[in-house]
Image (cartoon, rainbow, N blue to C red):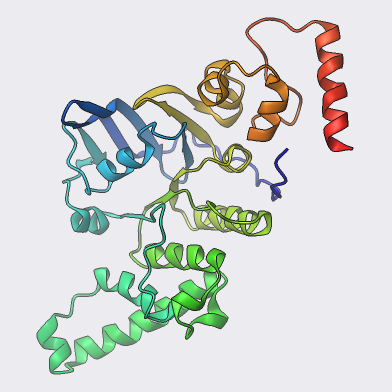
Length: 311
């Protein structure tokens, strides 16, 4: 059974009147004869934490790449703040969207502070000639960039390691540094691709708390993650992709209780209840409803097995 540590989830915000920030409309991505993403529709609202789940190979990262301009979708479109988003990474960043990646992509020979400053440079206006001549605008922006980078390092809990080379930071700290660098671009929407992959339970709890605090700043968050316990505690809504298509979308409770999601992850496992617990899919108020009603004897047997595992 998973030993992940959960932080207390803040009260879910009322998003009924929240405006749509990101809208993916019939997004399709093909590679030759392979359709990696097929007619995906997805909306993210202002101030929302949205989860994107699915088995390996479901097309989650490919979909992220379509949203952020790394891939140009074969068909469909991405709308951001009511305008069509061009498939160019720099324009996506300037529009107000930032992301992290599955694999850490830091500048390992730079300090933590310098890494965050690199992200901040996307918002500066001084050009190369300003820098060469050390003109007032360049000096002012350099000072402001450094100050903002320090603020963001403090925000993610890395203020004390600002001058440390990023390669010398712990794995969890490197993940937080990536988030700080993404925040340096002043996004409205932050996309996180498996932010807790490889983390221990304590680091996972800290990442969860950090994402809640990011939302408190007024940002929306779209997160890919395989840790189901983490996702269902964190997210306001969840979308499950299977073979490049949307299988189900809804509130965290609706999705975690959907038998189709269970089937997509673990198939027809004999010890279904045990497998669900290991995946973190068992709701806090009891087992996920099955397509066929359980008998009293089955429920008693499931509870007995649960007691043996906790012993």
